[in-house]
Image (cartoon, rainbow, N blue to C red):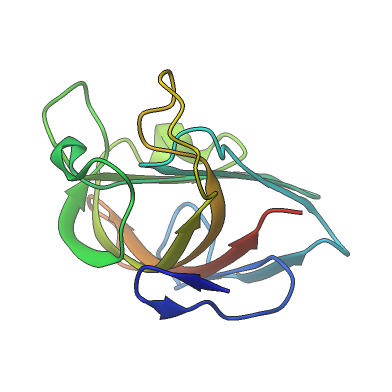
Length: 159
């Protein structure tokens, strides 16, 4: 299976999140999610944003949005991302667990879309950016005023 950026890594969907001490979102813990211990879903219909939800003992939301002007999601590194606030920042990152959004209203970070695959021939008029079939990404977020960061990897495949 190939997408822009080369061959996609095989294997089932999994998400790893590592929180340093001083990170208010992850509480200094590590988390590993697969189909065995969580429901991991990605909004496939927005082919230009990673919008991932993890439902397990806790509920996570991970949103990685490159600049609007790139169109369809493509591999690349996106630095100095900020928590989305209206249209203030064209590139943004929001990672929260359960109700931690109020503890991390502002954050800075970065993410890399390592590999991505879109469903072939998904040029549907009302879906201008296509449909996502696979995404590999890394991310880092630091809440304003926090002493620790939250880092992770996403390896998502459509079932």
